[in-house]
Image (cartoon, rainbow, N blue to C red; front, side):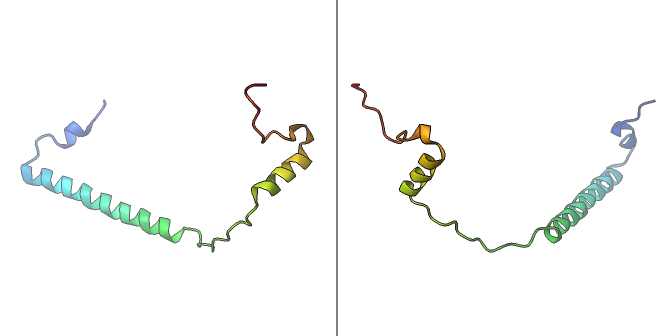
Length: 82
C-alpha cells in the first residue's frame, strides 16, 4: 500500500490544514537557521591576503626560455608575408 501526502490532507478542516502548513514553515525556518549557524561556526578563519610577488613579462619569458629551450622565441609573432 503506497501512502502519499494526499491521505494526510484528506478530510481536514481549513484550520487544521493551516496549522499543518504553519508547522512546516516554522520547521523550515528553524532548520535553515540551524544550518546557517553551523556553517558560520564551521567556517575557516580568514587569513590575511598576501599579494604574490610581481614578475615582469621579460622575467617570465627568460624562465620559460631556460626551462623549454625548444620554445625560445615563441613569444614573437611570425611575419605573415614569410
